[in-house]
Image (cartoon, rainbow, N blue to C red; front, side):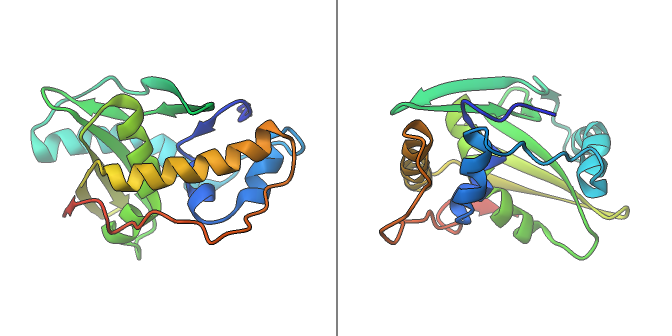
Length: 191
């Protein structure tokens, strides 16, 4: 089981923008162990099909994916961030995130769900955009290109700073204001 303390990572961004701060705070302060995902079939399917997804992306686009599982660490305004990308597109400044979802989902839903993670990874790596490559069930593949957005990442980093203060001061997070959540429609997306 991974130690999720001492930083905010890409998978934490979903909790940040969806208001699951108490749950995340408990993990980040060591009060609760992270959920063991080794027995969660959709998670394991995503892990096991990641290499196939990358190969399929290369086949469909003609692009070459490099730097698989490369990690980046950045500290911004006392908040330590860590991100591990699925890959870089060779001869571009673009990332690749590979996902596997259920048959009834679609690329727009995945883009909205993974937007905070992709924006954080672009920020950490200096990439200008990120491809989301997705399998849906076992018969459909789609991709979307999501561009880095300064407005979005600014709001996301502000939320992270507010959350991280509660970790640093070891006090439960309480939001006394209406947070300025990043709008998932702000970044430009090409389907």
